[in-house]
Amino acid sequence: MSPLPEKRYSVIMDQVERNKFVSIVELGKQLNVTRETIRNDISILAKKNLLQQVRGGAAWIEKTEAAISERENINYAGKLKIAEIVAGLIPDKASVIIDSGSTTQIVARALAGKSDLTIYTSDLTVAVSLVSSAHEVHLLGGKLGRSEHSTSGLDTLEMLSNYRADYSLIGVGGISATHGFTDFTRLGAKMRDEMISLATSSLFLADHEKFNRTAPVKLKNADCAQYLVTDKCPDKDVFSHLTDLGLEVLSAESMS
Image 1 (cartoon, rainbow, N blue to C red):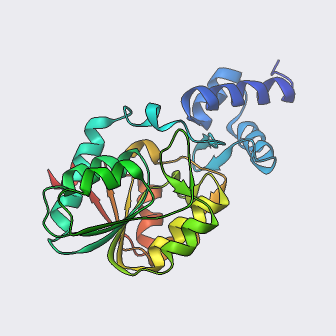
Image 2 (image 1 turned 180 degrees about the vertical axis):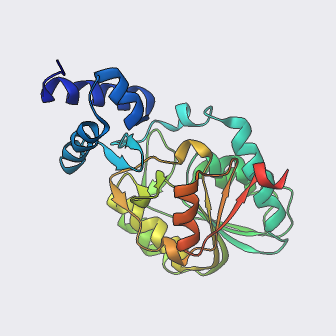
Image 3 (image 1 turned 180 degrees about the horizontal axis):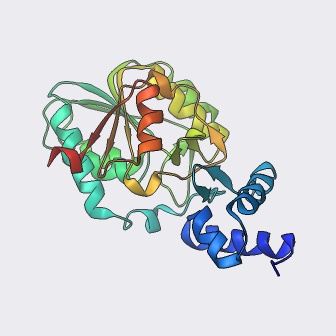
C-alpha cells in the first residue's frame, strides 16, 4: 500500500532539503509509487512554492543566503579557477563594476595584478583588495551590512547609476533552466540588473554549486549579459537555457 499524499509530501520535502535535488526515479523507488504519482506530487508542492519542479525531479528553493563566512569556504578551489579565467579577460586600464560576494572577493584578489583599473564596488573587502593596485576605487555608499561588509539600498543604487564601465562582474543566488538567474532580495536583484545595464560587457560569476538552485527573485536583465564564468560545465538543461539567453559559458573544466 502506497503512503498517503501527506506522507509522500513530507518525504519529498525532506529529501529535497537534504540533497538540494532529488530525481523522480529515486523518489518512486523510495515511496514505491509510480513516476506519474511523484510527478504530480512535485507539481503540487511547486505550486505552493515549496520546491522547484525541474526536468526529471525537484530542486530546493533557497529562501535566504548563507553568511559570507560560510560561503567563502564552499568550493574555494572552484572559485580560484573562476578568478583565473576572469583575470585573463580583464585588460589593464579597464573600468570594472564588481559585485559583492565570496566569489567576487576572490576574483578581486586575482585582479590586483592588473594595472590602472578603475573600480566601482559596494564590497569593502573588494575595495581594500584593489586600492593599492588600481588607478581609482569608488566605494558605493549606502547601508553597511554587519555580516557582509558591503553596502546596499536605494542610496547604493543611486550612486551606482552615475557610472558606466567596460565590464561588470556579477554574483548570483541561483541558476536553473526553469527560473533562470535568481537572487535573494528585490533590491539585490535590482542592483545586479543595474550592473548589467551599465557595463559594455557583463560577466556572471558562479561556481557549479549555484546550478539547479533557485532564489526567490528573478533577474530581469540576464539576457543582456555576455558570459557566465564557472568552474564546471552545467548540465544539458541549464546549458541550453544559458545559450538561449545568448550567454557564452566559460568553464575551467572545458578550458583545461
